[in-house]
Length: 251
Ligand SMILES: [Zn+2]
Image 1 (cartoon, rainbow, N blue to C red):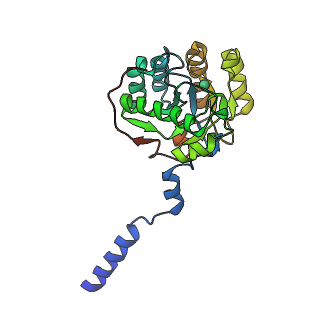
Image 2: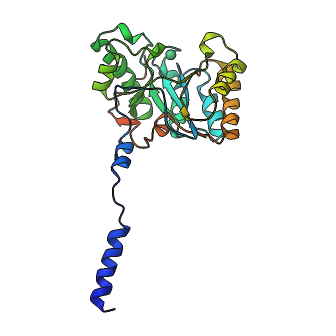
Image 3: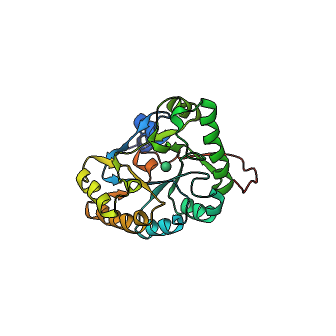
């Protein structure tokens, strides 16, 4: 083999070794489309534990339980529902730093379904500003209070670039169901098919201290990876956008 042949062969090898961009992969990286309702993960073998209505007094406990269990969770937080969001600044920062996903559940938890585009936008941007002040970024995922996706909700979320998450299992912790009754819901739904995105609330001690450890164990027994909502939708890069802090620390 002459020098020229080796040179050409090397060039060919380098060209072959170079990864060819896979269009599906590029789409997957950019994340799901904004303004469309998503109820579950887009691949099997995973479970996206998702908690609404915080931050509250159990947020840090929940972060610790998830992290100790090797799990990633998603926190759909509000600005004022269970006290001012700035009261739980440290717990939110810890959640974010530990790789849990912080997402929006609006500023004050209204039913967005009957509201004007302008009022819905205010609900989203007020929470965005608080999150920029607390964790340095704003979310691109949201879950509407009461799972209300009618009226101007989806068109506004499309405009604002929000991925709209609802659920495919309802733990009914909000409806006075015990953790044991919630567990049955997961067992009935089963571990097969694309991953579940359950509706749960971090504002109940039973959900944080009983249901969550049980779910971590259930996932392990069923070989399910406990990932964030964004991760279970194949989105590893676009759960947040940058923003500019404004120095506020009160609601
Ligand atoms: Zn809620």
